[in-house]
Amino acid sequence: MERMGRSRRIVAMLLGLGLCALLLMGCQSLTGGRRDRLVLSLLGDPKTLNPVLVTDGGSGAVLAPVFEGLLTIDGLTGELVPSLAEAWQVDDGGKRITFTLRPNLQWSDGAPLTADDILFSFAVVTHPRIPSSLRDVLRIGQQRVFPRLTKIDQRRVVFQLPETFAPFLRTIGGMEILPRHVLGPTLEKTNDGGEPEFLRAWSLQEPLANIVGSGPYLLSTYRPGERVIYGRNPKYWKLGQPFIEGMVFQILENLDTWLLRFRSRELDAYSLRPEDFQLLKASERRDRFTIYNSGPTTTQLFLMYNLNQGRDPQTNQPFVDPIKSRWFQNLQFRRAIAHAINRPRMVETIFRGLGVLQNSPVPPISPYYLAPEQGLKVYDYDLEEAKKLLQAAGFRYDAQGRLRDADSNLVRFTVQTNAGNTVRAQVGTQIKESLDQIGITVDFNAIDFNVLIESMDRSKKWEAIVMGFGSSVEPHSLINLWATDGNLHIFNQGPKPGEPPIPGYTHAPWEKEIEALMIAGAREVDEGRRRQIYAQYQQKIQENLPLTYLVAQLSLTAVRDRLEGVRPSVLGGVLWNIDELKLAE
View 1 (cartoon, rainbow, N blue to C red):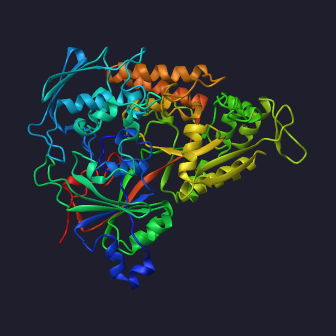
View 2: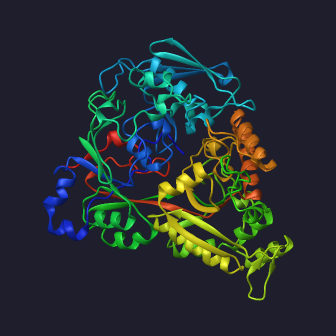
View 3: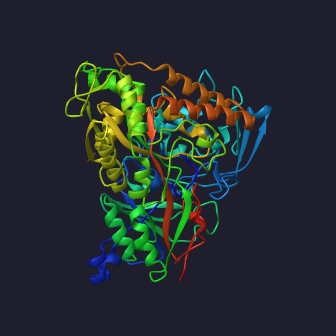
């Protein structure tokens, strides 16, 4: 999850093709009748306006233009570049890092942005009662401790690390700096349960004038289910920027509608699905847009099982049916399914040839990627091998060719994904068809995204899910997925901060081994040895298959020619340099 790319792969759409052809004025009203705004789109409403509490891509996209960190990345090279900090210095063998803020920084309300805001932001993301995804990434070493932060003066702070920690600069550089003068009281005040009021700060009900930021844009209007509108931040540290006066995110929950509204010329960018490519390529010149291919996306697409053997603390009922849990816990069962899923067919049909097989949590663009040619374990499509593994594990076939376990239970389970994502829906359908070939019945359904998140994050009552995660060139960015106490250790999620212990909750030895490799890779500063450690990490995941990786889609984005200064990349998308973009007259 590359937190420093400002765009977060922001894409867009507006109203309907036929409606806009007939009612131009109606379409213009959605953006305020102005063409000096960049028109984008979101797949659903944000869940929060608090950047620390973001757990979904929609909220992240909404807030990305509003907040900045100490550093950012160059979307083309991946190199660190200054942002709110004008400079940084590394001493003591990498264990002491000093940041110097730019002079005269201001928040959007005119208040000075100082070292106190850095201290406050760090206190928030490391707070034990605040479920920040960055919290897991900042914990260092076997003891999983945080760096010590000290203020030197109003422009300088120093982080003292307990040991070398290679991902530190990228991690801390991407931490959104928060306004202490606005949010400070919410961290100090707690409710009767001991939870800080910060957990309720900047909810969707918050007046937008109270959302004080440091990025190029400010939130000006939010209408649930309709749109989010931005204006320029007059206090932005890059004088004269951003060049575009404002932005609009139209909120739509159907990707087919996104396509229609891009074709109606209401939108400035559209992230293509594979089935869109031929249609849009044919009209590229006529409709004045360009399709950019940035290579395989860094997003992971996978099938994930619920390996949680715990029980609901309130009802004492198991999260997963014990019969199905035994199947999921069986490594040979997971490997058989990996062999049975026809991923090459997915590439050719669902992705129209515009994708590549995915076998690792590390994207191919990363220097730490272990390719199959270098020894990474892969699971080629092989139905006979799948059946052999199942039978060796004690499963058998009945007279109808359906798979049964050693206790004669029919092997049948549910796979879910989020509604509105047609690619994932098609992937789920093909998984159902593939597993039917080895006698397994899959009940596949797409459900509301919020319901899906609730089942994964809170109730923990689910069986298998087709899901996608963003990743980055730095493997440690996924520590919150692979640490056994990580906020996103979804396939075997423990209690969150403030929740009671889970009866029967346990970890497999390989989970701890993966976590240990992540810690070792972060501790190592020699790049050659880091590559070796992360090769073992990738191999360990592939050997145990908590996630079965599927296909990486090519990153294809159509951008209106009126948008100038676009420099697309697989790391930052099309809009990573949004403050530098211009709209042609």
